[in-house]
Length: 291
Ligand code: G1P
Image (cartoon, rainbow, N blue to C red):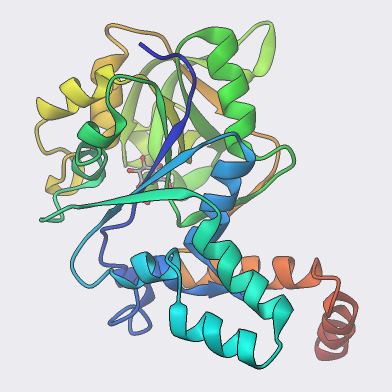
């Protein structure tokens, strides 16, 4: 088995119902956060973390993502003719930033099933999973932090965050205990997808970044539908835990749930404030609004 994490799988076949009506025609992964589709943030994070090969699991009506990471001949020719060199570089940059392959998830059978669709493209090597809805602002990038842990601990790594109260029921939740030597690392003994608050084994929620060993594919093939009647990635990793070590990792950085309207608004404000071209102007505008 090649031990280097070179490939990242982006499950992007979902319907995006939390963002209707915007996502009736446009894939939710293509919604713009300031001026970039949210999936591009994940792809840039993967590349900055050393990933060489992006695998996007798409579905019906999701072809805008393929066009986005492809060359747009007409657009580029027009920008060139008009002497818009900076914009041309932006357009070309997106098309050349990574090697991207696509695989279709023919039925929406769940996140575990979506990841399983990438089995042939990943092969027998460890790989990352990035859920594009979870936009993470971090330096070093969240996935890079996790790959470092994977290389040190030789076991799968799941990004985690502390979530208190009822909100825990929207997540996969870990059972286990913090590592005595490194409080950011959580030694997993179990996990459960979307538990009721009273059944949650801890307040450690799984966030959409994973570094997994390829054994998980075989286990996902045997995973029966779980929470919500879907084949859950959490259940596949729970089976992996019987054979291999799995760690939670509290990443350094800030996560936004950009698949949710309120989360997208928060991300929009924070990412806009960081933009050198208009951050100060936007800050002044916000101050004016709240005064
Ligand atoms: C998925 C996973 C869940 C994880 C969450 C993180 O759920 O199934 O374990 O906690 O992503 O965002 P979803 O948000 O797709 O319902």
